[in-house]
Image (tube, rainbow, N blue to C red; front, top):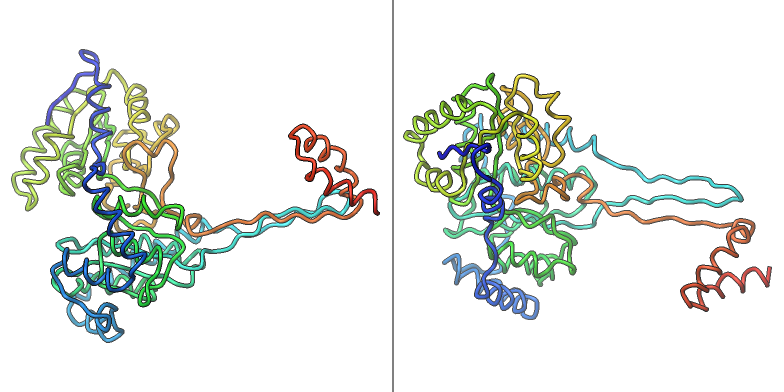
Length: 430
């Protein structure tokens, strides 16, 4: 990995290039997705089946598009029990964490009998998209579905492509553990369209969550507004701030844990010690040589990896805030002191014994996080993501009279006579 000395060169341009590395839809992708989504909206199931055969190379019929209870039971016979127990532990921790985020409705009694409040209700139905093919991400199923269940969502619909005709058993088990109601063997933009608009076989949902490729991300953008979406997820990223107390082998391992995701993943170290940077660089070379996905990791590090040396940890924190990373590790002697300087990050991992992978899988906080610098204004997926709120207002006649003149004055400013008349007619005819 290349070492950049912030004191000798301007690193801002290089870091900006890395932050903005995410895929954007080309005109060709945008046109293709629009055609797929529009056809599914018009034609429903026939278009879904046609695109599934075209892109996933599997010919399905409406009888086999939906996973049966028997298929889920069979999945438990084709897995390792220890892995199932690990998924159950993860699910338990995710549920406990997200239950602490729950909000309740409130009502406040104001003077003159006025009642104001906030009514909190869960969404009716949520669609969970899960990547398929070579990918197997049961943790993504748990992270997207469990907060929805905690929020009180009644209907959870999952779509996952099955290029070979079958879904990975761990995906089915994770869906079962998370309480997903219906699972369909479809993927791509056609799955997003089916959940957004509904077909004869696939129910319409109110919100779609979950990661996917550029076609899936573009489809989510296209249907947004007709349904809600979680976010447009970009390539995975990690930023580690380290001081002299950091273990270079730990830091290298954590950088590589993100680099192995895909060629667009970003792995950055910011340290106030050139010695640490050099030792981490050596460790990365040692560890990457034994990785199964070393070719992917190497490409990611060559294009979007860097070891940045700053004058001090304050400068390191400022640089990190400008990047607003998805995952931020504070591999320093006093992480809670440095935490006070951190303003922008999706998830923050404190100390030398808290690698990012514990957040990905088992700790409980959500691993669906803002990427590409959007942690400046977006938050992780949460129970709130599956709730909607309505304002409550009640005025007695006395309460209305107390504010009547102010309402009519503002209506007059805006030139909206009928607005003012709704007050006037009630006051004059009391």
